[in-house]
Each structure stands twice: as structure tokens, then as C-alpha cells.
Length: 133
Ligand SMILES: [Zn+2]
Image (cartoon, rainbow, N blue to C red; front, side, top):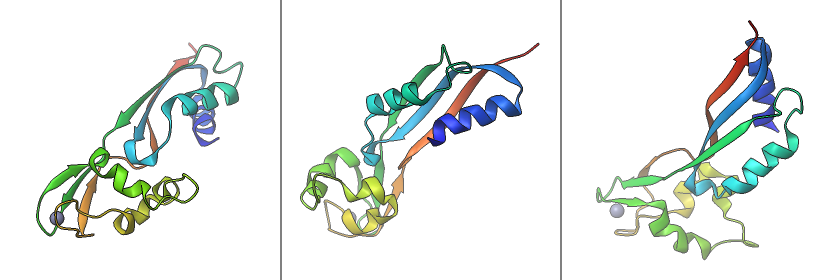
């Protein structure tokens, strides 16, 4: 898993003996469940390097601004419209954040031309290491 690999890499680069904390930011529209993500990290973590690791995950809201009519909206306001085109319960955005322009339209004028703000996947904001003396 990329996040665990990144922690191992950072620990190596900085000659750290422990990874103490990791702070993650999850984009709202990624549909990633923070508890499942934290659980997956717990399952995959390195038992020596990360035995007392604390994982913090925050959800970042996604906002949109229409280029046609200039109005703004949140992902939560349009989420129910996207579910209509779900296939087998999976939001296409989950796999293809780049396809947002196809699946999302302005709730006011129907335009597909808009600017998107906020993370669409998972980003590591900060890793706290315990470094050797
Ligand atoms: Zn609009």
C-alpha cells in the first residue's frame, strides 16, 4: 500500500527509528471511508517501525464554481444526482476523479464547465518521525 510504503521510505531517508503519527486528508468525492482506510493502514503497518503509530484522517470538502453562471456548490449538494448513474453501487469518480467534468453538472444551469476545489483522492499532509540521536 502506497501510504505505508511512503512512511517506510520517509523513515529510511531521515534515519528514524519510529513513525509516530501520520496525518491524511481525504477528498470528499473520492468516496473513501476514512475508518476503512485507517484500518487498512493498521493491518499493513510495519510492526517494528510503526508499533505505536497514530493515524489521523480528515475529510476535505470539495467545492465547485460554475464557469458559465458563476454559482458555487458543494459536493454533498450534488451527490444524490451522481448516484443515479452509479454502476453496481460504485461512483465512477471513485476510480476516475478526472472524469468529474462528465459526471457532474452545475445544479443551477446544467453546465459541465466548472472549476473544482479540494483534494479528490488521499494525500499525506504530515508524517511525524522519531529520529535516532
Ligand atoms: Zn452554472
